[in-house]
Image (cartoon, rainbow, N blue to C red; front, side, top):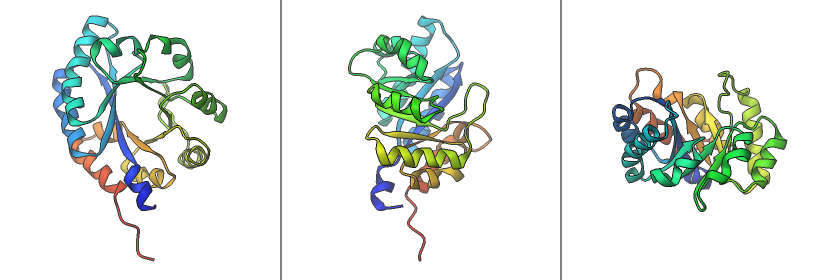
Length: 214
């Protein structure tokens, strides 16, 4: 990995589906402060607009002062009212059908891109990033070698930033080596007994490791 690629690769944290924003927010803030976190993709359990707006505002007060952008998963209509920075669309269909609800000038990104064709359509739509490798609704994700190939292909051809989903910290260095602009972490941060801030710091450290001696 070159020094330039290591310097540019940052983290994006994907929250679990949150029911208690007050209880979750401190751990999220600590993780944002401990690692080089560019953005947080927020997933909420509620679909009630009033409750969702309250939850988003609580999370925003912990995320944005830490220097991370707050992106709402499939909630583009609430971005402006809640003071969030943008929306993450979990599928290309969601992007197509609901992007018009996103206020002008806000960030947008999309995942759920199983084919190269879908990825190219996403790039042509003008999104701010495309995400590869995250688990689908069934919990399954692409094979890791296929993900590495997809990230490297994207980095070679497209200017739109690439987000690569790491299922574990072990995957972080190889995804960065493949020239992902951002590494997304979900369960790798929140699942298990380890402190989320410590995990975010470890992931950042993996992005900054020196080359092994030849």
